[in-house]
Length: 524
Image (tube, rainbow, N blue to C red):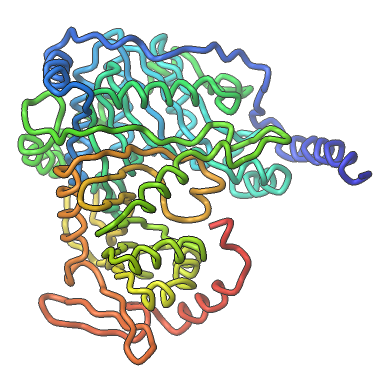
């Protein structure tokens, strides 16, 4: 009782000491003005929105979808939508990098704001480091507002500062907004797994992600917009101006404008831009006529209060997406395909998938191999359940890291690939595409979102994505031989086999064994 009563006092003392140690760094003013705003009414007054309106009118009660499978096309679809916007653009992302593609996106958002488009940018604060100056400058534009979700109390971005703040406010800071949406004029929305940054669009020198979004039109779009409003107006969202010593100024905006324009010119002259230009005419985008996959759809999204639940609130009532996906999986009769880069099913998940196999359903899972991830603790969490899943008849595939990929362009050479898509197909007709991994963090800690669609056409497209990703040249099939784990695949058409995680050293495998016995699964 005494410890509970003293806890707020002690926390306040430690925060005061931390503030003194950090000196003059910016602090979060929790009483800063946070005027509420909502999505603008959808108006079909451009060529793009009139086309969308006509397509939606021809399919009453249904939403239309186009999968964005290629990374370059996923970037340009966002650029095209931003360039066509007339009234509003709302972005909600876990990551928005200050890199080549992030700055290109920022330049197009700034251009839209110059045309009178209202731009709202909502970002999780966990990964922001080099982005502060850019975000502050953008916020200086009268038509742009930037808010940070569940922000750090002190805006000192060093590892030491963040670690110190986690020690004091770990229960809050460990919960993050993982949602990803891009809404234009209230009539078109991109939802899925990609953040904004080079790694998600095949640019830069780091690992490139194999990812998946859908471009949506129809009744599901207002649902996405309403979800954005709930997060934007929530208690956890703060404007960047809430930080003392912010750099929101007309001068900084002018400097950023010049630099972004220079970077955009450099981008248009790059080899990467040539590849994108070749890809775009044949790829999905809402300003062009073409095929849509139609079906009834709804948005599943967690409550924003999930990151900081009020005392006495049953947290399970704030979790909406995990129960929704559980209901979809529970109904599976013949098939379930799961794509999740972080796949830690837990005992409950193993029991669920095993029950599906027992009733005659084919269950297949694609996740990352050890060589395709830089987070061995996550792979260790998955490894705890691998044998039980295989014994139950679940088919497991692990995407190859493919280190040493040689595809080059002006922004660098990829050092490999890693799975980042989150999707599910059930009974060849029900589809989920969104931000949620199949792991404890997504269920209990992060906020997540995604669309659940009934469409055989979209299901077929995602099944093709799965089939290509799990080809032997792209992924290992994991099995049991003589009761021991066994991996098979192909390298340049030649069959390869392993009796341990492919590409791993003895030290890595020893570390995995240690990680599997540590009680960290709920934090992964």
